Every structure is written in C-alpha cells, then in structure tokens.
Amino acid sequence: MKVIVDTPEGIAKQAAAIYKEILADKPNAVLGFATGSTPLDLYAELIRLYEAGEISFKDVTTFNLDEYVGLEPTHDQSYRYFMDTNLFNHIDLDPANTHVPSGLDTSDEALAAYDAAIEAAGGEDLHILGIGVNGHIAFNKPGDPIDTMTHVVELTQNTREVNARFFDSIDDVPTHAVTMGIKSIMHARKIILIALGEAKADAIKAAVEGPVDPACPASVLQLHPDVTFFCDEGAASKLSL
Image 1: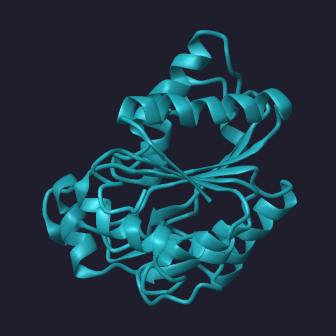
Image 2: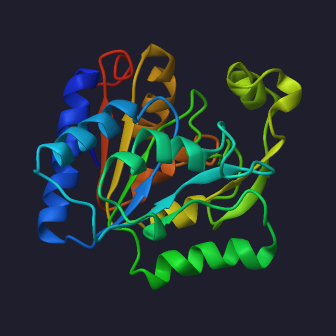
C-alpha cells in the first residue's frame, strides 16, 4: 500500500499519469470507474490528455461500481448518465464497451452476469475508488460481509439524506442500489483510492492504519497487493506519516 498526499489538482494529474502508463502498455485495458464528486478532477484530466492526443480509450473496456435501483439509464441522477456526461461522451471510448450495473434488472442472473462479464473481459487492470466518511467503498457499508460479489443493497437513511440534494426531495431518492461487492473490487489488479477533505480523515486513518475490519470496509484494501491512496492534506491529517 502506498499513500500519496497532494493537492486535489496534483492528485488528478498523478492518478491520470497512472492511466496513461497502463494504456501505453495495454491499449485494451479493462478499467473500473466510480461516480461522485471525488473523481471529477481526474476525469477532467483524462479528457484533457485525450484531447491533447496523449491517451486513447478506443480499445478500452470499462465497468462501473454501482447504480441506483429503479432509475433508467437516461435519468439525470443515474450513474450511467453521470459517466456519460462527465467522461464517456468526451473521449474515444466505444459505448458498447462501457458497462454499468443495471438498475432495472436486479435478478440474481443479472448480478452474476455482471461479475462474469468482468471475468470474461480478462479482469480489471485498474479500478478507481472513493471512500465514505464511515469507510464505505461503493455501497458496501460498515459491517457488510467482505466476501460479496455484485449484489443489491438497501441504502441507509444517512446515505439517502446525503444524496437528497441531487433530487427534488428525499422521497425521490432510490432506496436500493446495485453495487460491486468488496470481493469483486479486490479482484482488480491495481486500485487507486482518492480521498479529499477533513471529513474523510477518520475513515482514511481506519482504512490505512487500523485493523482489517468490516467496520471499515476500505480497510480490506490493506490486503490488496497494489493499492495507492491519494489524499489531500485534510484527508491525510490524522495519519501517522
């Protein structure tokens, strides 16, 4: 495990450089993406590199972490819409090679098929993660089993309240989501986690320096052979660096 402390702008550039290196070595890499505000600077930098002719995604296959149950892909709060708007539509990525869990078909067969598709593609070469203030990764919340693959979770009231600002009211916020499980995530050959702000400091300390404990899902990343935590000063403020 590596921990790198930098400004948000510096983190975006350093993380994008990793993508550039991977794609130079393997143009048909399989990449895992995340939604939320945390990776937006990184996605903007990847778009900049593409527009500058320094990187290409034309042979890349992508898989996303999660999706709200019940939202059409065209809904402006769906994670498919988020990825299309903030990254996919701005680079030379074949839409047919992009995968986001279905929020409409959550059958056991569909969930298993998502993990099978990742395996059939050769497994993920790199996955990007954020982290919640309670240490959650994707929608894997504290106390959830660490051996899960893609599955449906009920969203906590706190999670729904946090996301209510994106909807007309909390009543419109979905109650469930499809998420890659911790075991699914750990199958990626390389993982980058980005944490920004002092609100993430306790979670980062638990994830990096605490015991491996389901109470902090991100702590399981200590067991991964190639993971890098990118933190700004606020997120790293409680680490013993």
